Amino acid sequence: MRKPKILIVGSLGMDFTFSTEVFPKEGETIIGKSFKTAPGGKGANQAVQVARLGADTTMVGKLGRDANGEELLKTIDEAGIHHDRILFDEEVPTQVADIILEEAEGKDTKNRILIIQGANMTIRREEIAFLKEEVKNYDMVMLQLEIPMEINEQVAAYAYEAGVPVMLNSAPSAPLSDELLSHLAYISPNEHEAKDITGVEIRYNGDEVNMDDVRKACEVLREKGVRNALITLGGSGAAILNDDGFFHAPCVKGLDVKDPTAAGDSFVAAFCTAVCLGMDMNDTLTFANHVAALTVCGFGAMPSLPKLERVEEFMKERGCTLPDLSALK
Image (tube, rainbow, N blue to C red; front, side, top):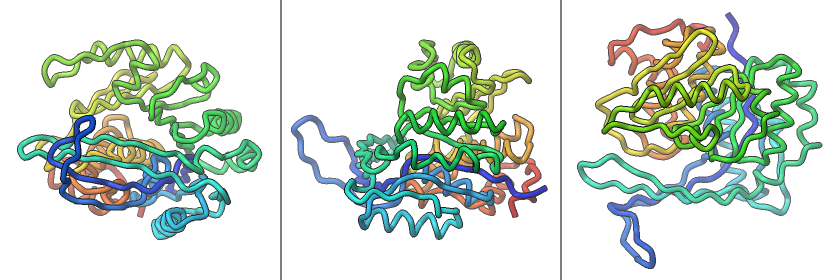
């Protein structure tokens, strides 16, 4: 079996992370605990995670001609990602994100994120027209919502016409056209994004998620044309509905959570990698949950994304039966 070939079309950005014991209130100034800078952006995070798991990875996106763009390109290169199709804007800066972490003793870490999208939003249709011919060379296309919607729609249409499955990580939440949804093989909103798309509120009884609500939301996504409706549920794991049935996998428990940033990116990247390997759905969800679990135990977006060797060690530590990952090595 050859390595999966995965194309990521999406955002690249630089994350500036501040940690504090409590979020500041309106008009309040507080003294924080620490500050770190790390490459990020949902598209780049997912590309780096796919590459660190061993897949043959290509990234398409847009950077500004600035120091942040140079640092991001260096990081992409060091991860072994094909980046000859990354674009540059000569006037608009690279995306930046302000991430505030609330780290209170005895409580789970929470985050608040503000993004200035910069060059990510200046991608033009003609700049990615080459994908109409090239997309057929990939096993999976991964999209997110931090670039212009028309670009996502164009790439999804190219892939659909070529018979290549498309995963849309529908974050941050935005209205999605029926045409775009009909071109998706997979979609992966969290419970809040799923409500925005379907109108179905996913309720909780304490810490227990209402699985009937989850299934109903998945059914609505399927009615809109998406063949595989995947919903991530934070501390309740993830669930998917497709032609083979409804599957749910709980999250990994007993973690020392340091930073939830990029957990969703690592999950969807691992999920897509596993799908390309032909894993069954239970193994796919379990694998993706363990990759995401390792991510929340580290600091920063890209720095916390684990390599395949660490994922294998972690799954063994947790008593999991390892799926066949030989094609990734």
